[in-house]
Image (cartoon, rainbow, N blue to C red):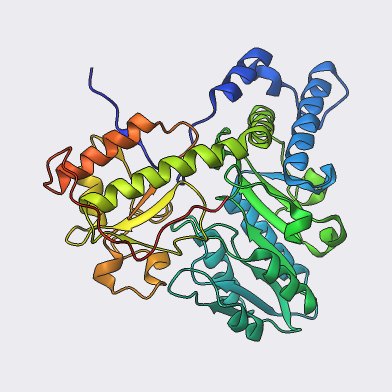
Length: 399
């Protein structure tokens, strides 16, 4: 039986944790048979209770209140609701500020609002992928409706100083939104500490079921968000439609597991990431790491091998390793990644990028196998270890 490729694309989606599957199987996937918004009978009451419990787990995960959690189909819908909803609700403000390395769910939404007459400011990042706070401060004004900056970049894994940006936004009376899709399950998240008004993330990025996500809306600003759809008034009127019970329950269980295991995940994945990076440096001293070497989450290696395009590497190794060239939302394109290009690379350099992402179920044996695969791809015999070179910088993973 042919061995399946080693999965190294955790930032695209994570496998559903087996404990989530087991818990759903034990309680029965038909727990969602009843309508959680129709509590006149046993089935509706059972479904409603399951949703309440899941909401409580997710609010605890974010250190938020239960009523601040709005269920959606995923982070893309959540980002649209947060940004469009705030723009529609603003009466005396017309400017939206974001970064040029944001996910398309944010960038395309903001650009669409620009076509509708809003003033859009897309601020560039530095060569390390992190925004210059002084430059950002010059962009935010008393006309700014919202500042939207992702907590962890989905391609290069760098951490943005969201707490500082929140302070900056609130100083001008603007709302602060962060896309935390790549942070959930990889970092501990505290909405009070981050001081954000809106936060978005998806279940399937943190070992839960696909098809469900969350928008955190701070209680004090709820009335400032205008819903995108009309209907039965579910989710406090912000997102009408029947809540999908079983996926939501799985989402809650995934958050509960993350609260217990994020710390140990960080330590283990950080060790494997360092092992992988050291192994790749030994076989190719010219390898290039994209993004700040220190201010990044564990598990992300966005790299380039001179002489190989990203698509070429993904194709060469597709039977052995599951990799990607960047965001799952744009990997079908032939243009270089807008995120990697934003670091100031030439187009031909940006096209060399591949994203390797490790996760909860990555093993040391898999990392060793992956290093061997890159050995063979580069034409270096497996087991060959050239003399160590003097390093000018080290990559430490932030926790």
